[in-house]
Length: 61
Image (cartoon, rainbow, N blue to C red; front, side, top):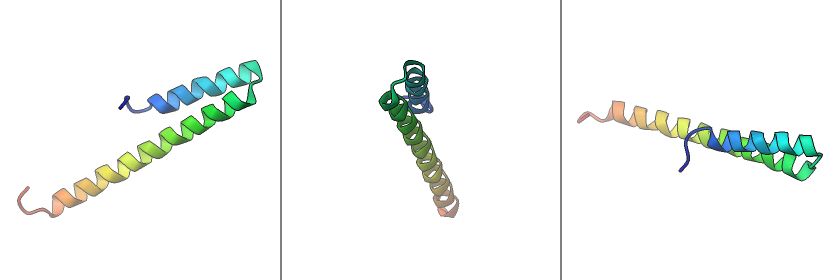
């Protein structure tokens, strides 16, 4: 898996390229990629918080 923010950066480049060339499809794809990246980061944050809670409740850790 690529580093954090890669999908958002790729999306931003597509969006900018789409705006510069007047390509609405590419612009929309870019926005979609950015939203996917944000959703993935949010999911990762929830998973990390849940793991922290689980670890704090585990008496053997």
